[in-house]
Length: 295
Image (cartoon, rainbow, N blue to C red; front, side, top):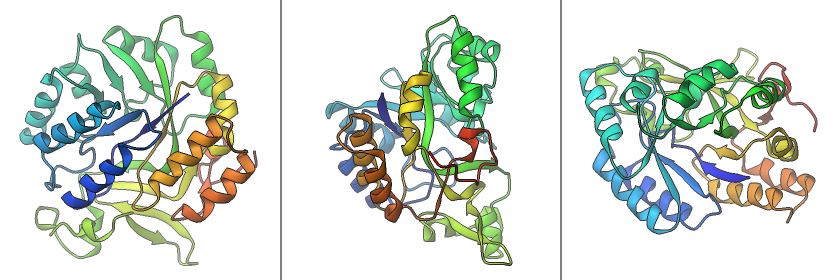
């Protein structure tokens, strides 16, 4: 079972992004997804910069995948999508059906936002070129096992295993609205929140995280204790979503459990202090996503 590093969901400075991937080049992650998937107004890095990072990571032995934006809102977004799809060096992760259309005839990764909840829908994407799919975030182990048992075609399966869950995308920027700023003059305030902006209930309980136009879970989805079950189900790749600090250490802990160098109990004890909020795993067990089910 391989470890993949998902695209950075937050808005970090150019230097911070470059430094981050310099560390990840030496990590146990075999696959690295790159690119802006949330908001096209985030311009610290543009496509040529992402391609430069991709070339460096490839030279270090990583499999690099370019991720497309999830919610396209302007012609400029489409132009960037077409350029990504037209690159002849790196595989592309399609995060909307427009990207799938641009990538027909090429090998691509079907991202987690394509809502592939059945074997026929997955087969349709495989026929169009998908060589890997990322399970929808809300799907549980039972649903995944059913699809993998029914499929009669080759495709790699990847599961989002660690990080705050991207729950929704909107045309509005909630981080800007929090500061009474319009989206078109947001002043890039989301850069002030490198792990997103926490929303709490009136009882001061963590509820959601605002990340520009994206809404995330406040709790951190963590399937570290489920790795053996994932392997038995037929999962090929587990995805770790980058966070502001300690991503390299989290990758190490996942790698240690996958390769039986550390027990699940010891790894869980070490990963919990590194998480920006408490953990959850409800979706994997067919429960509400914010629940934490004991392994």
